[in-house]
Length: 117
Image 1 (cartoon, rainbow, N blue to C red):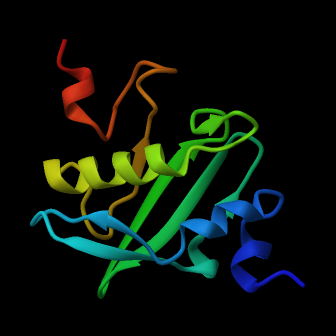
Image 2: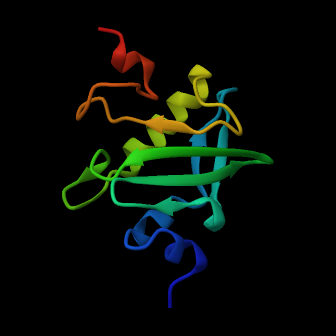
């Protein structure tokens, strides 16, 4: 039986594995990412992950193809890019942020060091 979170992320219910994983916050401390089923959405081209870090709500969008690896999701890259966006200050509470995997696309990256060439 699918959970509320898995249903919200269908057909990519495996993204629910990100729930309660840790990322590095703006202050450099490890914080638990808590996905919110009512703020997660999937459409034809992108996925929006709504989550909280403590009491602060965040939202990141990602292209369905940018964070795939070997037929699955690259959870390490997603967590690393969220952490980098938080540490850099580019990702702010309450403001949607678009993650871009810099190895696959050009555009705004949550990892500023990847854009500095």
